[in-house]
Length: 138
Image (cartoon, rainbow, N blue to C red; front, side, top):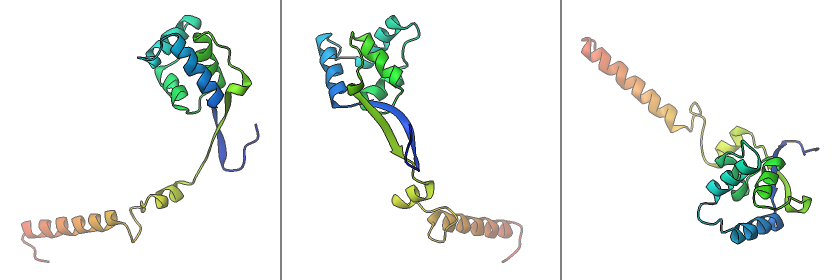
């Protein structure tokens, strides 16, 4: 799969059709109260090791997982996963510095950082306190 520069694959996610098919089947099977635990249990019946609860949660929340995991959940409730049920999940990778600037985080050593200022003040305070205890003035 060719991905645009700066992006990487995050597996697949259920689209609206796939999500509706799964939810409708879960309602038919009365899997509404504890869906994660029940889908994990059913996936273990279909395939010995089954799925991890975190994987099932990702599927139900629309987060990217591998196609086989979604197929196993569908199989566990008696459905067959069709290509029209899912789509590729992609997330653009944003350089860390850009993310930090977006939410207002400054690197600790930047002039705008309160962390650097606080550290320098603490250093000065400690040096001054130590000097006073040793009988030095300064």
